[in-house]
Image: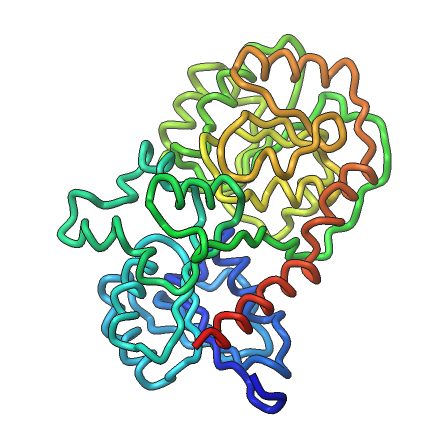
Length: 363
């Protein structure tokens, strides 16, 4: 790349509804160096659904309800824009852009996935073997010039279970996307306050968190932030365990940092993750995490006894909950430092910029 040549990059997303991928991709699009990159953000979905403020870059909404109905409009957008690099995120859109890569040989295509897919398919038919495009879905990552993995677990999954060459794979963790303030050291709330920020979907493991909470022998209050397809099922479980009076539900808020700061312990129930933003953010404000062991970066983020604990099953989870209630020893500044030194936006944005420059120069 010559000194006066900017790299033209299009970031593509299905929508800007609340979600980790949507937040991270729009954040990166805004933060990469404008003296080196011309950036556009194209959203298949509706402008009215945008949950994140986008400043300083061109944003185009195709105003389509689904990726399938917006595919032709996206194709025309790429043909007109002629980007040097197109980076897309999330399953269905990555399938579409994998197909498009065959029609735009001068554009480099990068995919960013959000989960350990071989595990996720136990909860969703993610690999799409029963669809018309099943073969393309299974092999879509071979069409990309690079695939961004959020964690080492994800990279190993792509290599071992999807037969993707490791030379195509690169690990870039999620950045800390907000200026989270570290809370002051204080006494634990009475009753102790727990929190989870996650979609109400099967892979997020709300079922085993509620099972554990139903068996603890102390008073607590639990805040759940998120919405999703299993809302009714999860609330039926709450009623079954007689936990309704101990639980608050907030479908969506832009004050995540406030709720995390007010809590004593973050509860992570997921069966699989990509690289969970919520537990990084919880640590960033100084609130430690109690998590079930699961693929997707949890073992990378959590340093046992520094910013949290990792357990293997519900019985161990209950044991740690009881222990935390009796002996809370985490220091907010230590918890925050454990992630700020590794996942600051400066560090992560630099990795994206280096990747884009490398991919552009590999011609």
